[in-house]
Amino acid sequence: MKSLHVLLLGAVLIGITSPALAAAPRTPLSAGGRTIAGPGNITVAKTQTETLMSNFWASDACVTVVNAGAVDLTLNTIGAGQHSIVVVPLDSVALCEESLTTVTLSCTGTQAGDCRVTWRVDR
Image 1 (cartoon, rainbow, N blue to C red):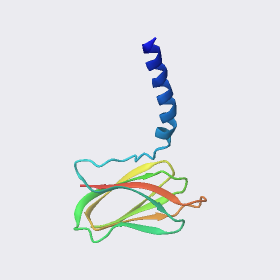
Image 2 (cartoon, helix red, strand yellow; image 1 turned 90 degrees about the vertical axis):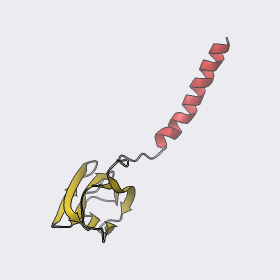
Image 3 (cartoon, rainbow, N blue to C red; image 1 turned 120 degrees about the vertical axis):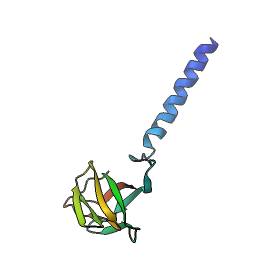
Image 4 (cartoon, rainbow, N blue to C red; image 1 turned 30 degrees about the vertical axis):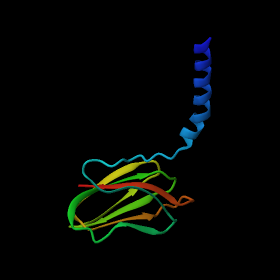
């Protein structure tokens, strides 16, 4: 009988905590051994640009971006060259740049809404 009470109590606790756990925000990126910035979560307003990093010490690095929203965004890097890539909703990209100095994100899509992004920079 005691084991039945424990089992029922466990089921009740799981039922109570599961919705709370499911609603907790998750970061799709975590810091790794070569992470030098981030991970970070940001929202970029429609047609706006957000600077993630500037005046960086010109080290070779890769920027990983996860587009968690419903609007296209553009990842821009400046270093030995200038590169950009469009990240469609619910997709991710990594863009590497020699002598990286600046990273920006622009909310460029034609879809309605703002851009929701998770980012990280690694060597």
